[in-house]
Every structure is written in structure tokens, then in C-alpha cells.
Image 1 (cartoon, helix red, strand yellow):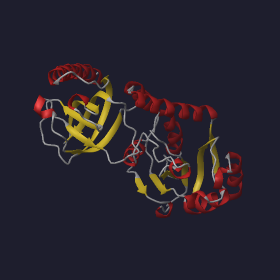
Image 2: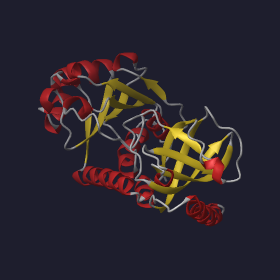
Image 3: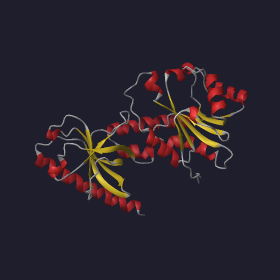
Image 4: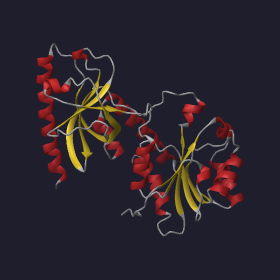
Length: 323
């Protein structure tokens, strides 16, 4: 059985902010999705610090290095920074360093990175890293160089096997593809938790309330957050400590002449004013793709069907979770 320490994750927004109180067990990477493959690495880190001799550190970078070095401004990620914080804390990670990645940092030589960052500032006792990890200016150094540096600077290097790294890579790709295709059930299976979006409820066109289906219009600030394929989804959220179920539409609302994408949630049996509220929306299941209906009556009929399917889904969902 996996053991976890109950911790409050400490956040540092640069390497310079972090001051080690003891030697550290560290891993680094983007950990986008923090899915079951990533957990095998993170568990190695947290299990090594259970007895308090060392403290656990995850070093990650933002913006994503590919955004900076390859100019991929449209790169989409599974997790926002806030989502990643929440997931890492649940796994018992004690320290998360989110270092600003820029071209200056990328030009550090491999030895400068190891000596000045890992050893001098982060005080590593051990680094747990993938066999294929490359680092330093132009990514010229590899795991063999890191092992050599470990002997020079007196720290351990634990390699993650090729099989584990391949599983992580394949899983991340499958999750992104599944979300892009709208297959949220498969994505959640790989993640081992519901894929979610965070956003603020803003005023929309308020068309839903005129046809009996008032919606909360969700605005997501992070342009890099991966949004599922257009369609209607079954969702749940915690609002004022109450679990609320609903159905969410991602799309352009073509029946009423919409031309920009919106994210709208119709919560079942919930009528409070939510304007200005920040919500986490867990996406559980996809009901159907976006459609353009002949008229408003046809749209209302379909929404009634969607609502019934949503209620039926949660009847089963609740019975399974109450076992």
C-alpha cells in the first residue's frame, strides 16, 4: 500500500525563492496532466522523504520550454499551474518550484545547471529522472553526463526505465488526443481523475433562460488550456460546499446564429446567482456532438432529452459511488 504524508504544498515562483532546510530528493519535468504514469515517478520522490530526513522537490518550468525555444505559442496543456499545484499536493509533494523559462536560462551549460542550480541552490541528495532526459545548453548532456556529475558533486541519480518513460509519453499523447476528440471517458481513465476546467462565471447572451435552460457562462483565462471537442457533456462541480450536477455545452450555438465558441453549464436544480464566481468543472461524460437545429423548439426538445440523460447518468454514478 502506498503511504503519503499529509503536507501543505509550498510554492516557489523561481529557483532563487527556494531555501532548502535539508537535503532534497528532486525530480523535474512538465508533468502535464499528472496522470498515472507520472505518479510512478512522483511516488518514488515522496516515498524517499517519508521519514523526514530529506524533503521532496518538483522543479518545473513556465512557460513550457517548447513555447519559448520552438515558438509554439499555440501549445495546449492539460493542466493550468493551479491545477498542477492541487494534484501534486494530493500526492504528498512538499515543494513545487515553478521557474520562469526563458532563452537566458536555456543557455546555462550542463555543468552550470548541475553545480549552480541542483547542488548549490537546491541541495540535492538524489535526482530521479528519465533515462532519455537531456539538459544544458542545446540539450547536449544526457543521463550518462548526469551520473558523472553525481559522482563529482556527491549526489545520487535514479533512472526511470525506458518502459516507464514510454508509458508516460504514450499516455500523455492518448489523453490529449482523447480530449481533442471528445472521448472524455477514455481521457479520465488514463488520468485516473476527471478532466476539469477552471473559470469564472461571466455574463453571456442570456439566451438559455429564455428557453428554460439558464446557463453559467464560463470564461477561462489560460489560453493554453486544452478544451475538449465541441459538444454536450455531463459535469459536476462543488458550489458553496454543495455537489451540483449539470450538463455543459462547448460550441458556437449555431441554432441561434452564434459565431464564437463559448462554454456554458446548465446546473440541475440549482438556481443561485453565480456571476463572478470561480468554478472548477469536472467533465465526466460526453452526451453528443454540437448540432444546428431547425428551430428553437427542436433545440428545446433536444435539451430536455440531454437533461434526462444527464439525470440518468448521475443516478448510476451516485449508486456506484455509494457502494
